[in-house]
Length: 442
Image 1: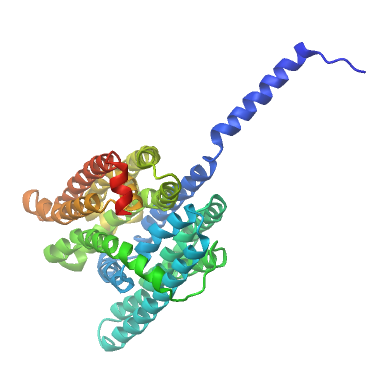
Image 2: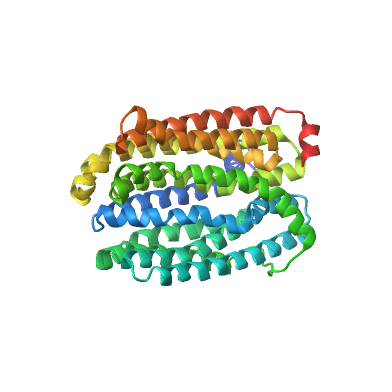
């Protein structure tokens, strides 16, 4: 029988133990890290694509498109908050291992998504026919939005279903491919200009939604369940109303600029919109991961303080990423814009200012804890206060600093900082409230 040299085996055992501890450290964290990487890749791809596109699009055309896209914010009213209710209730009931009712919730939401999409398609193409004698660019934009809005409905519905680790691995791959498509499809703009810019968005959105549909983890058929509908409306309508208020307030900067300088001013501001939208991809993507995690965790354990811990880690992570991205953008834009987008030099300073606002947006991830807990009072306080800051910021910026792109941009920065303080403060208070009081409201 061979002898074992214990002295020589100790380093090997120590190495195995260290390897095991290393795997333990990353266990459960690798998926969010890789998913975050896909969000960063998406943000970078959108920024590069945006800078390249404006090279071939005049400010007036971009301003027209940005103005028409405001319809996407208002169209969600057709869903009556059903999708908002699903975002909260689906992961909650999956966390409670009630898959049967979870599928009823998904089927009911899908039915309403289909109905809303049909209304948008008919209404959108009807408007295109009514305005048929107007600017062809306007008609083309309206027709494109008639397709993009239903695609966004389905994408939001499908995103809720991606809540497990395996599902998020698929979603991560989709996001990486989406980043590649965002770059490759810039050729549409190069060859077809304004029409190519619009077609590009429809093509990317269509491919992403189709892939998400094929890979969807929950395969519920559209069907009406009265119990599911009642719960979705009870939960979704308050969330929708508050969320809608916030989204509508988010159009204030473009509305102010339309009043100050028309679609051309909105076009120059498009450079700032690209910069702001690029940074916003990061917290938005992380929220898609964190929100179902928080809700499922609350459904399993009812521990509200743990929601603060989960959210704070992701807020800190998002803020670090966004600070780095903002610094890179502020340094690079003065060199990139004169070369690739000289027509937009008038919007350069506003874009640099807007990057500062993006740094504070990561705090919004924390507010998902309020939705998970159904802390209605705190939600109302936050959403109304945040909406006021979002709407008044650009107005006060234009009034106090100047009726310019820069004045509006500084107003956006002030509003973003205020919402950051609100998000952290109100969520902290909500997660320290009496547990039984919160659970009774659920």
